[in-house]
Length: 86
Length: 257
Image (cartoon, rainbow over all chains, first blue to last red; front, side, top):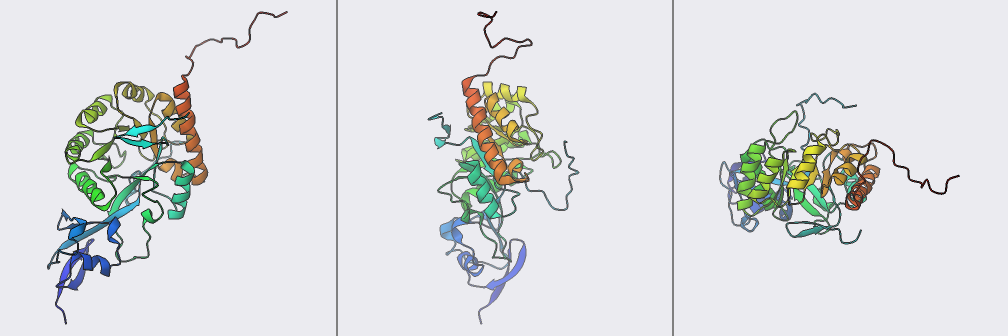
């Protein structure tokens, strides 16, 4: 059985195969690579390196993509005491 | 009006209405509203992918980046470091060097931190970004942003999402007269007349999100905004009559009995 390591993906702990690359992780999560940005230990990765960069114990991976936004989305639980102008 | 194109950093746009994609019920409604608005430029935010629920669809499955100019923003960033990080992530995730730069100063007003904004803009311009900065209605800061190399400036009309309309038309007018790059009035528009007013003042474009997404019928409001921006633009180009305190008769006196 392959050895496993612990990594953090988008803030959550997760086990992964010791020889897995960032590309393997994205495939395992069923994430299409063309519209995401990946930050590995605070360093933004070049997309062409996904399949060459092996993950190591304790790595922190952030996977980001575009969502709806214009103005900042209201932060839940942080009531701003908005008052209607009318 | 033919050939009245908006040009920013060499890119040509037909519509002078830019729209955000936040706060809609779902992606289908987002898509319909954006189609109704006629906008070419749509703003998006950069956030963590939901890794536990992969059934969530991607916004860009609904908005074809070939059809729209996707303008990622740094919404929600309260310091220079975060804004730089999000801008760089947006470029890595995306489609171009365009970034709508927001460095916010305060959660209650969402007013820009213009000191942080200038600092972040300087760094991003050096890194080759096309920086469209969300700024206050301050002509001096607007000029400094242009000096740094921003190809357009985006002063607010009122606080983001407030719907208060154009709170300081005189400052905006000064910005429009002083600044030689396109001015996009961003944030604070509440209804169609606000958008028309911004355009009549001489804005080159208007950017909005909440005024459409938060309307009871977002798709109809998107259409209203399309016409308002167009009408305001035409009125600006046509040149309005001066305001006078007293009446001037429209019909001639000559020939009266």
